[in-house]
Structure formats: structure tokens, C-alpha cells
Image 1: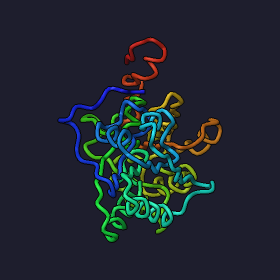
Image 2: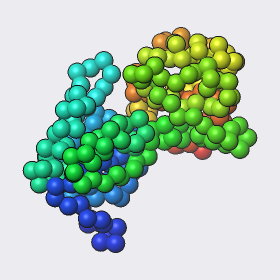
Image 3: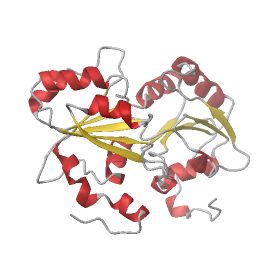
Length: 267
């Protein structure tokens, strides 16, 4: 646990009766921002998601109260309205409230909805961006989100949506690689739609599970076989799924696997 005080020059006011909507990053505590660390150290109450790990929560001040507000697909979860109401209630009681979310609160984290509710209730709040798992997970697997030799754009999309989700055929027609969040269950439909939209079955696919944690694992497959390969892999979510040519760079850039093996990655 870090005990050294943060320099005053790095601190910003965290006033009683306010809420910080902060990203905890993808899992590795080293990827926390300094503002997120300040929030952990100064908050009276920390309302955290399921994907915020124990190593990060251990950085909280000893007097801070932790409240679990996890939302995981297929498991009992807190209702979003209840979470938002709780943030407002805690702030009105005069607490410094840290709403700690995995990744970045504004990237498929429903942070925008919570910020809207706080604004409507007249609660002061601050947004503390975090490193999103859709960029960090592939990077820890040796897969760049963009590379001059493969792609100059990338699409971040969610496979879980209440309004039908993206038009996968239209996205396929752009030829732009995809980084998919929460797409595990929907992958059979997504893969089929992408092929119908013109993507080759040989398009490289990578599935990165438990991004940036000590349990991270990566399956490299293709669009044509990814559903069967994932089913046979024994892997489990949470996962980030990458669809695109930059996956082919992994053998050269897989620094983490090389580090685990005590080697330097090479082509």
C-alpha cells in the first residue's frame, strides 16, 4: 500500500458534499491516474464496481467506507437508478464520494448517465478519466489500437445494448478494425453479421480476458472460427475482443508474455 503523501501541486479540492466519477483503469493498479489515487485516499465513501480489484481498493484511506455497486451480466446486480440515488444521498449527507468505475467512466461505463443525474440534483461533481480496457487490454497483449502499417482508425463498440446495438454490417463495410466491449455472449451474432457485411473469415481476431491483471490471457483466432475457438478455450469474461489486421502484430509486440517468460519478444 502506498503511504507517501501526494505533492500539493498535484492535488485538487475534493470538497465534502461532492462526487468524483473516476476511472480505476483496466485492472493494473499502476495504471491509476494520480487524481484517482487522490480520490481513493481522500474519499469518505467509495462506491465501486465489480471490476475494481482488491489491489486498487487497498489504496483507499483506512477510514473510507466501501460500498459495492457491481453490475455483471447474468448475475444479481445493483440497479442503475439505485446507484445514482445512493450517490446523491451520500453527497447530501456531506460525504466526499468517490464513484469508482472500471476503465473510464465515460467509455461504456454509464458515467454520463450518473453525471446527468448529479447535475439535475445540484450535486457538485468532477470527472476523473481512466485508461479504458479497450485500449489497455490489447496493448498488454501486444496489439496496438492503431499502427501505420495496418490502420489509421479504430472503432470502439459495445456488444451489449438495450437499443439493438451498432449496425455491424455497416461497420464491416468501412473496413475499420473493431475493439468490442461486453461482446462475449453476442459474439456469434456479431461475427456472422460482420462476415455478411464483407469481412473475410480470415480476418484476425483476438480475445483478451482479465485485461492487465496477473490473470490476463489472450486467444488469437479468426472471424470464421472465433466462436468455436472461444467456446473450446475455457476462457471466461470479462473480455475485450479485437477484430482487425493489427492482431497480426502480436508475435512481435507481445511484451507481456515475453516478460513472463523472461524473454524479449521478437519477430
